[in-house]
Image (tube, rainbow, N blue to C red):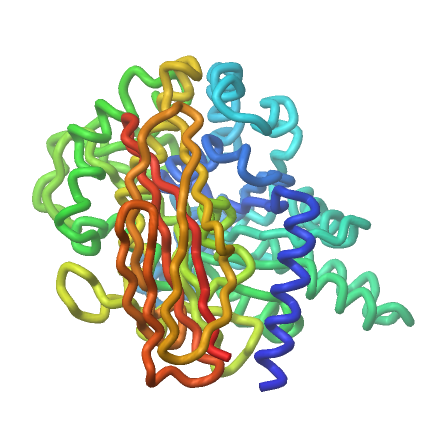
Length: 496
């Protein structure tokens, strides 16, 4: 119980800081795979929703530069050790692709800024690009510009938490933390500094793409809050056809992707990789997805031109986007970045997998990926709107509604009580809003009925409810613009 209370205090403190500063701070580390490129493009389109403070090249089990001396390296990770054996370098895309995307972002930045506030300037983003630890998978001995940049942010005077996104390995993050340990571990202030950094750093890692979390971060910095996405990201990755419910697949297929997102949407989306698009990433011989003759009968299924390939790392930044689900400070609540449960071994580590599975509404069965896939239609429509922002005026584009609940989002009740919620919405484009209300039992402790008539939602708390039980209700508002955009309010009822 003490561990749970400690985590809740940490979340509450983080939430208050986020509220004061409005936008969460974040640093991206990336190994440059084609899915990182596509993730990066989507990330830029959402860069008004958080404060980007670093864009850092790093390595992974899939991609590393080599040391230029012909040194042979073999992976520490079983999968890539078996796949590649000894290599001097591996599928390295270089350290210029981010700058190329930022040059394209510069061309659409004026139009993006017309459609929403807070988009960072291209010049500012370019100043954040650093090279981290890239020579080999898991290399964390070198002090690099990227690791020093992360170190400086973790030690600065701003108390706001920093989300460290690991789209590849965690090695550059590990090097930054090791540099802090080396600099201060023998000083009288070490305990205070370690507590400050541990409370400030939040890591969102997509798989273990090297062993530096296991070998260093988890051992030396066990109180750094970590979100570990090992399965749910796959709904956004190469095997999406095997993961996404059939009803949502059209939003990832060529007709939708080409017309709504990829074609005639400006310089940035011109650089997005899709199946059969004729593009080829320099440095990666395994990037054959653009060859239209090689997209049938693949290990992930049959694909057509302009089908989605992969954005396996997009959940890492979607976790930061405030859409009304209050998941930023509560990873167990679930949202566009997935849903995570507290590890039994380390209360500061939140994981996905079977324990975080939701009931798939289409199959009626527990599904490890449904905490991510349940939101995918809304996520893709939202991307399509931002693609329009690149080339259209405010009047020609659609913008998300704002949803409200008169009674608030935290309600106390007794067993058997009936509760009414008066819901409403404001749409900046004066579009009509259609409401939906549903219970999210996996996010709370129990399930309760909710019925919606117009803008009035009626909840009945079960008579069997016990003190401390929580019931999560999602109020969903969809506008009738094109594309249709969705925002939410999460109402939590706690039994007293």
